[in-house]
Image (cartoon, rainbow, N blue to C red; front, side, top):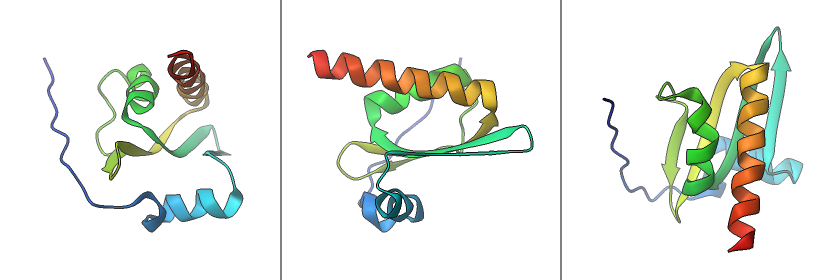
Length: 100
């Protein structure tokens, strides 16, 4: 059994390097594909982050960070198929949130 602890933070999303890159590019996800790997960078709500990190099956240590305002910053270097599963999970979670 694996457990983890999320700490509260006062880091504002626009104060991180990824937050500034997202704002500069006016996107909500940065996907960089190089040499068989994919880098997924985004800032999402904690519920969406949980859905996106679920395909990693607990092997997401160091690939996310809690931000202020119930946001989570994801910075994950994964295989391209895993990146696609993460993005599909993101879309599904956001669609479910919009229905509520």
